[in-house]
Length: 247
Image (cartoon, rainbow, N blue to C red; front, side):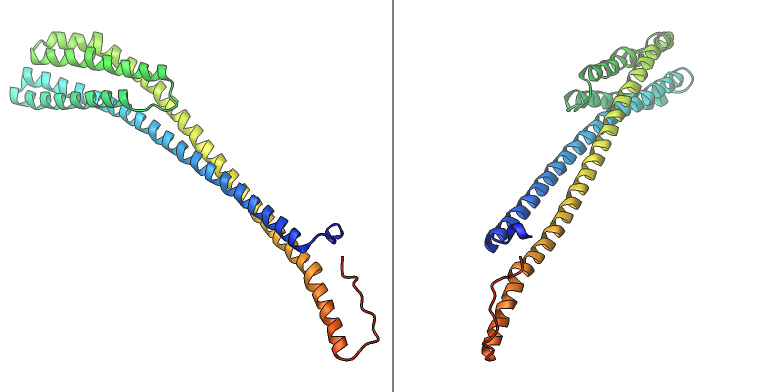
């Protein structure tokens, strides 16, 4: 510490205080920034999950719709109209839920998803709804069972396979985004932990340095001065008073 022997104690302490404040200011700012990034990443991840839930929910609705249509067609042919009406009402409910899901999907934020892929899955679902489901429902209502069977084979199944393929592509994109988000959150968490640990270690070093500095340049000199005064008080006038304090 010889290089700071001639520097005023107040100046050294002010430098230490300013350095310590800047250190924790920087760490705090970085931590708040990282937490904000984590929050934004979580919001994006939740948004992608919502998108995925809507699409996969539509897939379930399509399955229940076509199952109800097949039951209704069989009931009309071999059962009673009352049984068919129950299934047709279920079809109407499912189609309403599909329409609501399509409207919601069209208007929500799709985050980091490729807009082309978003349009692709939306159009595929819409075609399955309007070109696949609706004609089948009308055929059952009109008791055109041959048209129902042909529409199921020629129109619905190809559209269903198309929607399934696009849905798998879409879910893969969502999974990739979620994996990237998880990796980003893990990285930010690790960097925050390291920054806080580094700041803690730096704080310990500053405290130890400050303690040693004060002992060497304030406490020890004051003890020497007190020793001189005690000697003078005791009447020991023959000793030599020195101003050579520890450097």
